[in-house]
Length: 165
Length: 108
Image 1 (tube, each protein chain N blue to C red):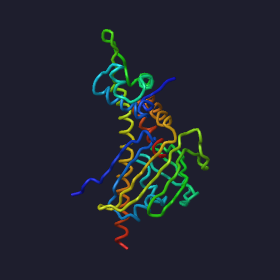
Image 2 (tube, rainbow over the protein chains, first blue to last red):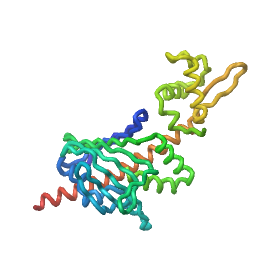
Image 3 (cartoon, one colour):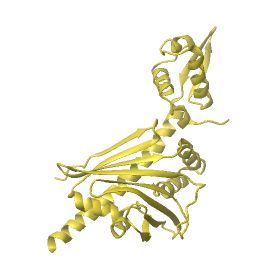
């Protein structure tokens, strides 16, 4: 019997944040690696049918991860995550935004902040992902964008947009 | 200025008003009595909620009643559900990746 792993999803509108807690059936160092090594990130960061492809990864404070989200039709959306603070095997935070292939941030587009914390749990490892949006307008923008284009397009937009979170 | 649902719920007083109005339609007076703030302050929140189109007013005789629009509230739910599903599928992939990594570790 495989029991469902915990996933807790909550919205903190006041602080413009969404929090996703999830348990993984693996030891903490392995989960940490999966979050911080690009060759592993590429295997899971993009929800299907999208896939992630890393161009550059420098996991240290002040370094960044430059990656593309590649769609089923080969379309590419580039994103860049700048690592702000790293506390090995405990937590890291980053600022994520749209970029171009050279890693130049697109400041017209929404950015978000990730605070990811790791702790050992009975089942293995508990990861708390807190995603803070700089401005509630960005959430609204995304919402408006999505619903105008219809449901399918909305999903694609969300895929593209959310995948940069 | 066009407002939308996220502005409606960005404030704790407005969330409380929405909760009350979802339970039942209320007059401005009845609503204001629920809050420790001036009637003007409550009116301002109601005005924003109406501009966001999550609250409507209806006249019954000489009284005005406010009620919430559930269809609008559902927009938020739907968006959040997509967001949730996105993370859910991402994490299921990570489950698989971790299983593979563990298997590899055991081999060596």
